[in-house]
Length: 232
Length: 45
Image (cartoon, rainbow over all chains, first blue to last red; front, side, top):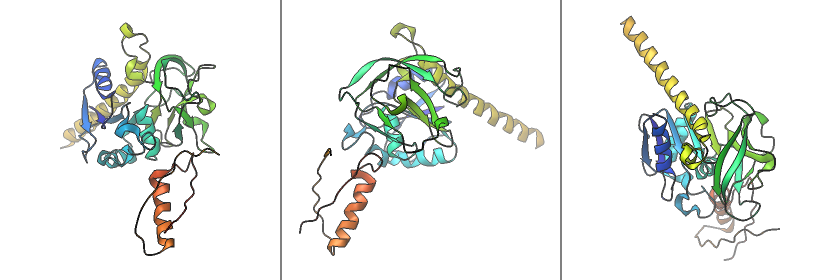
């Protein structure tokens, strides 16, 4: 089971749930005021405009009661994926390095962009090949990623394809993982790219990777359980 | 220099140093993102 957090102002939470269900995994919505997470294997912070994005995008959401639970879930090695506003929340919460500033164009951007997979050995990209090119839509006003000084290049998982950077992000960075590799944030919206009817299905490669990771974890637990049963 | 925002805060503190410390803490934790923004504090009694 995967949890998707709903903040006041989230608007891609249901799309994320629908996308995971289309990939054959159960997803549940978790309210921002909940202090605990249900028993889940992964948490997704969806896109939208949490708390109106006042002050800075994600700056207020990081104080939501559920974020304390998300932080301890991540600290225990749980898989956390932040999409767009969720990426901004994770940066503000200190779970991911860097920050997101207003687009270089100062305009909202909403279109398909080409991406290049830099790392295919993460739980979020395992269904992709290294240097594979994906097409996934972006829609944001503040997606200009600014890495901290000395961000290790191995933490960069996705880049915008050459010439396709929609927001002025430094080094064309579109998605990063935490140092420990179990938290990822990206500006493009994989949950909007899972159905051929509305264009690309490349988003399913990213979300499907997370589904695989959740399933293999469940299988791992089942084997441990079977082992314990056979011993007793 | 780009001024992103000016925030007026009224608060009671036992002296100017205490007020500056408290507002500095607010800036670091919420009002500014130190990674991409800097801030200055001006006190008026």
